[in-house]
Length: 235
Image (tube, rainbow, N blue to C red):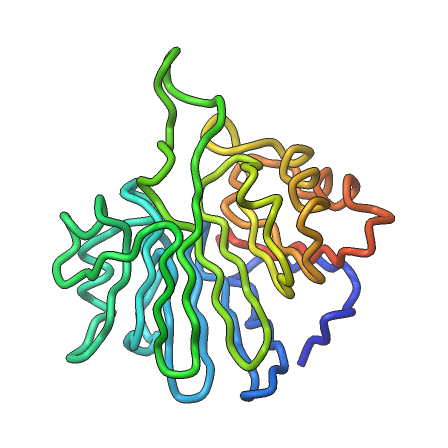
């Protein structure tokens, strides 16, 4: 089991091993799958966030699926249906729910509970970057980041975003998964600046294809934030 004070490390090659975090309600195990896709296990429940990219053969079916946005690296209806079973709960922003069968809408600022989990939908959007002047890659309110609380520990999953005020204002985050890639989100240095503002105990770069994550780690040196670099692009 990895403690919150573990040192910076890098895993390469195959899919990264699961990370485990102790909580008052038992361990939370988080397994990177690919890019923005990951699996969470706690108690007897399995949660997927943005199951879209990567391989899912042999992985357990979902009790809960959370989707952040409509883009294909986050939303893949066929993968969602592959992982769903009778009773699977799917939570997503309205734009996603129009496409993914069975999805329930959760909007920025809303909170729901699922077993011992508390799920907060938080904003994710671009401040300046877009495909053309006057148009952004991610509009405010269209997608969700998520803060998940279990056994007193708070886990943040940024979705696609720049270093928005709502991210910088987060409080009490124990573990953060933060995106970085151009042109769609932000640079490693911009991500590090935003992370310094809300100061999680541990941070993982994810959704970083083409980004130098070592630059992110270097930018956080001396901050007291533990940076963990893992391989989100197996093979």
